[in-house]
Length: 73
Image (cartoon, rainbow, N blue to C red; front, side, top):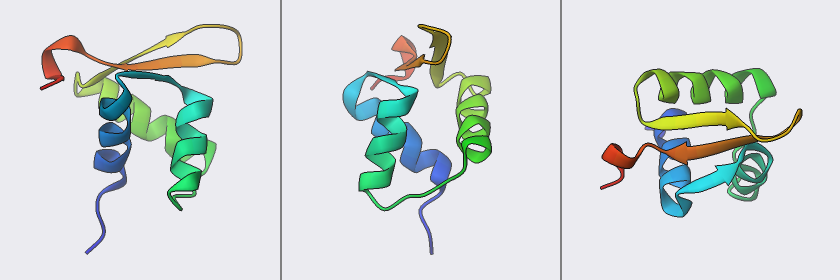
């Protein structure tokens, strides 16, 4: 049984509190998780809709991903 990708990404974000999208992609790559940009963006959108994370633009090409304060337990 595979660990759901959504949970894996959320746990990775939760460990650091906040991270840029490119750093998160690199961290997942080091763990052996390869996914397309489209899949990565879909998982981030799902987590944001669930109210677990917040994604905001830092620059034109960089996003900051952070855990929502209420869910960081």
